[in-house]
Amino acid sequence: MKPMFSHAPLHPLRQLLVACVLLIGLTACGSSSSNPQPQIPTALVNENINLTNQQYSALRLDGGYVYLSSGVRGIIVLRRNSQQYLAFERNCPYLPGEACATVGVHSSGLYFEDTCCGSKFDLEGQVTAGPAQRQLRQYITALSGNFLSITN
Picture (tube, rainbow, N blue to C red):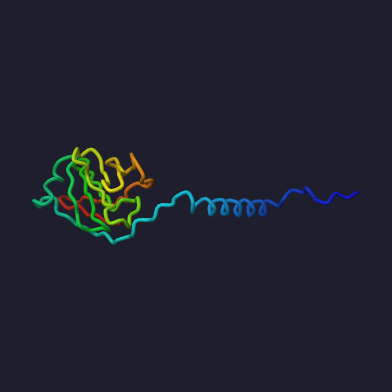
């Protein structure tokens, strides 16, 4: 009696094709349910600020911060040290379309928070308390003398 199925090994190229198809299928199946929160809209950011201007005096001290009006809901600029500045979108990643989904610096200056949904973020933009599951959108900063550029 001849067997109905052959157990001959697959050609290496065919093995690779089968593995790719399985990987793509698994990735596509998991992507929609693993991150149900909507994305923050995109806004063009191209800010250049003169750190010697009085309105940015808080950025002369480590831990100092200012709010800018660009971005989607504004930007928080934070001075880590004399050579490192961080910039984050103020639109909370949890339900970013809600009118009150705006992140600010807590009065202690130790973390960011959205008082609307209760999400909290460390000063690196990482979630420390939810319901947010995504970190804050971070913008690129570059320091050149007394000028700080913030872009995306």
